[in-house]
Image (cartoon, rainbow, N blue to C red; front, side, top):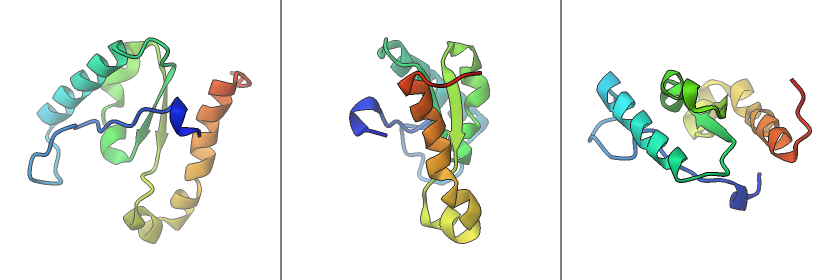
Length: 105
């Protein structure tokens, strides 16, 4: 995926001094994502990378964007779930197919 076609953003764009994310933080983070979406008129897809980001999906379902999920490319995922880690390029290829206009539903 060419970097010029992407914007990276954390679903929780602030640090709460812990790795845990509360439901309230998730809702507030999703609202911040929705604000960002409003600033990106050519945006057509969102990839939620990792479990915490994927948990925000219900808050973004009504955006009209294509929503994708991907495992996080972290060393923890690679060590614990190597098959899922190896599948990440295939998950992102689905997004590229959409951007190239060759996706069929």
